[in-house]
Length: 197
Image 1: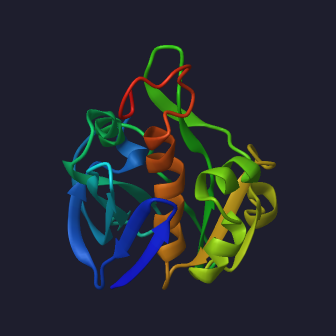
Image 2: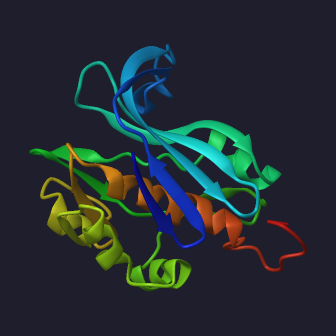
C-alpha cells in the first residue's frame, strides 16, 4: 500500500489486483451488460467525512481502462455525483497510460460535469506544483494531451499525464485532485452556504 496527500485528501493505493464487475464505458450507450474486469483499488478520505473507494479497472478485452467510483462509504451528499460522473478514461500508449486531465465543475443546472482545466487551477487546488507532485508519484511525463498521445485528434491542448501501467499511483492523485477537490471547493458554484452547498 502507498499513501500520499493530495491537498486535504489522503489517497491510499492498495496492493494487488481484485475482480471488478461493471459496465465498461464503451457500453454505456451499447448493450449496457456488466462484464468482469480486474481492478486496482484506492481509498480516499478527507476531514469533511469523505470515505470513498476508487477503482482503476481493466476490462476483459484488455484495451479499455477506466478509473471510477467504486463505493462511497461516507461524506457530504455532494459526493454522490461521483456515482454517475467524473470517470477518468486513460488510453494505453505502449507500456503507459495517458490520461487527459479535466475537472468536475458545477454547471448552470446545479450538477457537476467534466470541464477543461489549466495547470494553474490544479496548482491552486493542490497548494503546490501539480506536475512535480505527479512526477514524485511515478508519472513519466506531463504536458499536453496532443504531445503525450500522438493519436489524439481532439483536445490536444488540454493538460495530460503519462504513467507506467505497472505503477498507476499518479492517476489516483489526478482523480482526487480533479474529481474530489472540485466538489469539496464547490468549483463553479456562485456561493457556498455550507459543506459543499
